[in-house]
Amino acid sequence: IRLLQPEKHGGLEVHPREFAETVMATAALDPAAGWVNGVVGVHPYQLAYADPRVGDEIWADDVDTWVASPYAPQGVAVPTDGGYIFTGRW
Image (cartoon, one colour):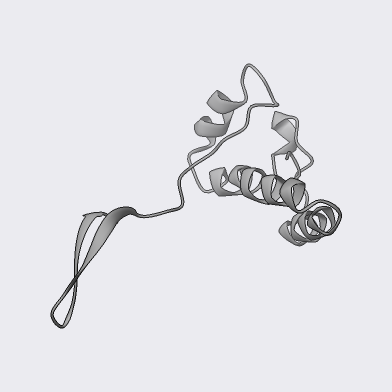
């Protein structure tokens, strides 16, 4: 889970390729563990694009803090003549 987490926040800060290879190897042994490792473990990498203070705040009290976010768009598609009507936040 902490493969991509910065070293200054208790992580290993590995190259994304090493992360991907580790996730695939884990999934080969246990698909559920691979899924959790991949989904939860990628968030520290995404945080690298945020203001550095975000990581400082998230891991200030506990370097084992996990971060999650929704990837699924929140909306509804209703079939109509000739297409769909979409509502929601995208």
